[in-house]
Image (cartoon, rainbow, N blue to C red; front, side):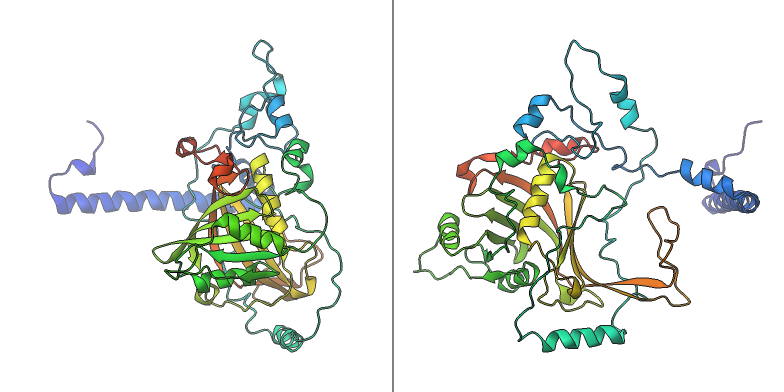
Length: 426
């Protein structure tokens, strides 16, 4: 006699009861196995460590594929080829007739396993813990009062410090701007200027735009920035982007930022590196103002620290250098503000926080490293974050050689590129 299948019972009520019993029986069996394994691993801790090392979830980022890079692609600094500049053992095409070396076999770069689907955008930077909130910190309130009282005074001399700071990421590798290919520097010398000078940003909107408040928020995000409205009067002269860029360049502005709208919401962000480009076109999604973030804080006029994560290709490093040039190279450490640009699957998540270090409470855990183990030396210290806003997501669509479309394109996003889920451009 064959096995009994509860799904073939004709009575619907009886079939539902049998299915519930079978499901409960399977859950009880899994729970018993899990508890039995836990008791066994408590006696043998090395078995738990071995299981955790073996059962690492497979994600799309861990199975990311790279393009075959010819030597000419690197010397010419091409942006349409996605090869890993941070990995010295990246795959290269040696030749059609020559066999590939043993160390670049594709099986070594890809591992078998099931994908673990990640729902939504990684809001690791955006999550806020009530225990870590700084709203109840007395020392923080005293610091903010001191900052408010000193706004009218001249800022002190800024101590030189390196920017941006490299922070490790759980999903992607940290960005090392020192590994930028020389061909890319020679191709965009105006963007890779190493002279340390404070940027000056001109912020504006598209013609007949209603996003005046949103554009004004960008002036608090980018230091040394100024917002100028584009007139919407019928009889007034409509200045083009080239004319505005020429005007801004003559007044020592280093960047021009244009916010575009759709249905009275931010839809695009164009960034022009003055005086002659290049020009980057981004689309904006998930725009959230700081006032709408629960437990948000108010930003100060301190220069923030810049954190760049996940830019690993020539195009990604070019984009990272663009964002680096928007922020002064000497952040104010005493302001404790940090702007994070996290690239994951070609989506750039922008977050701005204020951090604080305080004493750990008895109900809190110690600071843990990337391996999940407590960090030695900081057992009694707890780090708290408070998001300042605004938060939004950027996606790079086009890179123009000069200003606007007529100057030609260095790189352009194509829809068929996303058919391969494991290939990314940044």
